[in-house]
Length: 290
Image (cartoon, rainbow, N blue to C red; front, side, top):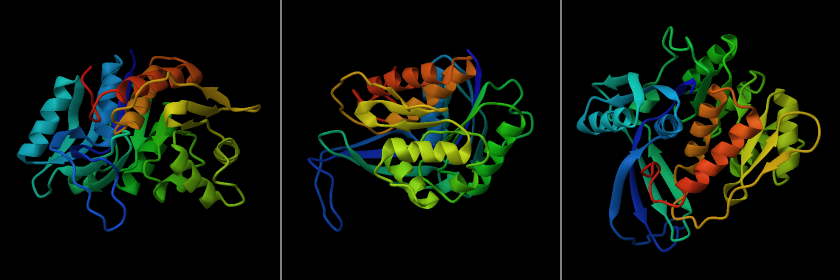
């Protein structure tokens, strides 16, 4: 398999399962608290490694017990953490997650050390087959990573989760964009003149604006691919019973990057990502056991 460079957040997830998601100002009581590894960068890195890629993660954790545990878990999954900084004056990032009985979730993230991730280190792109960038890190680091990958001629996947100011600024960069429906609507609203509710139309408009492929993840409906003229391609997902959708998008992006690094064409890579995400949602946690 190819070599994947991932830059993004490393968090510890604290998850509570409740009968339903709380509304504004509402308290909903659930069961126990489950703690596990998280962060979009780390989750995707683990997914790529499990898909067989050689994975290097660029990120940051605190020089604390939580960070040490996160790094140990990543290494055990086969992720090279040489370029994950351990910061003495920052705490490791934490995600507070509520999951309802249907598997839907709400997430609030305390960035901690993730707010201090910098540009890709010199030489890290040597031999890379794909670069995967997520946006839970500073905008400057996102822009630098995407620009460096494209300048080096390495395929780059930009997962705009969340949509930050860096994403519209990178529409001309040539990175493959992988928004979900909500993120696509956000980007469409920023483009103007596009109906955010029209998923195929918004994806087409984004592709025409960027000149690069757009892959919209659709949850249980799979994904939509716009990578040239003609109608968007729908990649269906197998029918499964979702237990927990936390991290499903990260799994998709990690496997997508792994397949691209191995030389697969985009639609085959998307199909692999959709299949992997469908397996992931059948188990609790952002990184279900392999």
